[in-house]
Image (tube, rainbow, N blue to C red; front, side, top):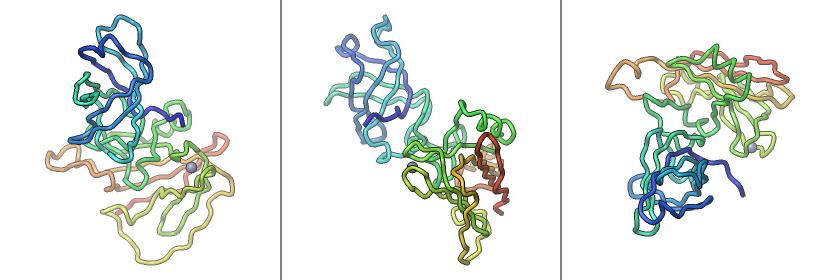
Length: 247
Ligand SMILES: [Zn+2]
């Protein structure tokens, strides 16, 4: 199966490997402390005179095994057996599972993180981003892990939002107060109702208190949202289906 790359990186090779690289080269990467994992390289500038420095992408074998351990600027050592062949410095992260949340790089709540993407090629995403994104407010497009972007959406009165992938049937929690520390939760069963009979695209906007930006001792907590909005779109028409203050 041909998978999408997980990260983009600048590679610096040393020794024999500096002059002997090929598309699909697959060294081991020290992705986090004590964990080596295999990853397939693809290079943008192979064959050019680069003095052992290349730019390209890495597709890891099992990213779900080592989540949230990569950030832009992270240096990852590469090996063949015991021998170090160089390192990679991460310049972009395509797979949100790998991405570590922090103040510089806040992510979405855990229940939806791996389905949240920033899609700069989608005019609807761009317009929502322009209207709602800010230093403490983040906008994402929802995509299933099977790459499908169409969902049947369900809502209940709590309020919660769930989305069922039209391709693989995966049920994604889009908004659910039980995951948010600041939320007032009601201990009661709610009935799910279908929002739209049609398959729609979904966009989300999660807002946070700004204390993580200004207080040194406050870490960013992706689950601690203060406000959520959910939008659905069909035929370029955006409709807001949730606008909820969690606390
Ligand atoms: Zn799916």
